[in-house]
Figure 1 (cartoon, rainbow, N blue to C red):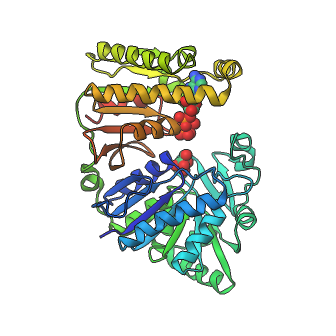
Figure 2 (cartoon, rainbow, N blue to C red):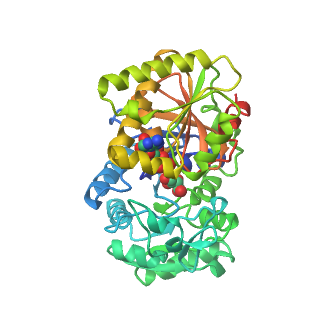
Length: 422
Ligand SMILES: Nc1ncnc2c1ncn2[C@@H]1O[C@H](COP(=O)(O)OP(=O)(O)OP(=O)(O)O)[C@@H](O)[C@H]1O
Ligand SMILES: O=C(O)[C@@H](O)C(=O)CO
C-alpha cells in the first residue's frame, strides 16, 4: 500500500526527505523523474525527484501535475510537495503556483507550509524563516545566484506567488499539541486561508505537525515535516526494516566530488589526508570532446591503480572560492561547470564498466548527472550517513550510492560513509 507520494523539486532534496522517511519507519523508493505508467514499485513511500526548482512556473506546474498523476494511479493516499528548507524560489516563484495546481487537482482548499528542519538550523518563528541564527534574508541565501531570498516572511512570499491567502499557526499553539493545531487549521479554513504557515522551533513541533496533518490530502514543506508524518504513518516502527533494502553493497568504491561548497571543501581536505586523491585539471576538460574522453580514460586507470587501500580513491573538482573564480573568469562559469560535469559522467561510466559498485558523490548537480549516466531510474533508501544523506541502492543495477548535498555532512563524511556502513 502506497501511503505517501512525495513530489520533490530537486534531486538531493528528494534524497534528503527520503532519508527522513526511512529513518522514521517507512520503506521508501526514490524515482528519478516520472517513470513510465507501467513501472512497478514496492514501497510505503515513493519520492519522485524533479528538476523544477528554478524552472519558470508553467513548466514546474506541468512537471508536478505529471508526477501527481503517476502517484494517483497507484492509489496513493497522501501527497507531499517537497521544496528547499530555505524556500528557494525565483522572483516569479513556482512554489505558490505548484501548490495551487496540486490543491486544485486534488479538489482541496487548504494545505500547510512547513520548510523547517531544526537539526540543520532551519526554523520558523511568527512566520519568519531563519537559517541558524539569521533571518533567511540576512543569510547567504540573499546572494544565491539563481534564487536570491530577500524576504523571510513566508506568509508574504506565498501570497506574492500564489492565488490564495496565508495564515499562521504560531509557536504558542504548536506548544499546545496536535488537537490545538487542528482546531486552528479549521479556524483558518473557515476564514478562507489556503496556506497555513507552521511555526517550528524544534523537533517536537515537527512531531506535533505530523499528528495534526496525518489526514490532510496535500502537505508541503522541507524534509522536517516528513519526520512527524512518517512517525504517524509507520506508527513508530523502528527504521531497521525500512532501511534494509537500501543497505550498501561491498565491492570497489570511488569518491567523486564536484561541489565547491564550504563544507565539501573541508571534507575533501580531510579525506586527502586519509586516501589517495586526484584533482581535476579543468584545462584538460576544456580542450574538446576527444581530449575530455582521453582524460576520463586516464582517470579510470588511476582510480583502478589506487583501489587496493582500505579507503576509496577520490577524484575532485572541489576548489576554494578564489581558485574557482579564476577558473570561471578564464573559461566562463557555465562552460567550465558543464565540462566538469561531463568529465564526472564519463569517469563514472568507465568505472561502472570496470565493476565499481559504490559511488560516493558530493554536489546536487554532480549527483544528478552521474545517476543519469549510470542509467539509474530508481533506488531503495538505506541507512542515514548524516542528516539528509542516506546510502541508496539502485533497483535497476548492482550499485550503491551516497549522494551528498553540497553543504550536508560532517568533515569526516567520506571516510565514515565507508567505515561505518559496509
Ligand atoms: N573546479 C571547478 N571548476 C568549474 N566548475 C566546477 C568546479 N568544481 C565544480 N564545478 C561545478 O560546480 C557545480 C557544483 O554544483 P553541485 O550542485 O554539484 O554542487 P553544490 O551546488 O555544492 O551542491 P548542492 O546543489 O547540493 O547544494 C557543478 O556544475 C560542477 O561541475
Ligand atoms: O531542504 C533542503 O535544504 C535540501 O533538501 C535541499 O533541497 C537542498 O537542495
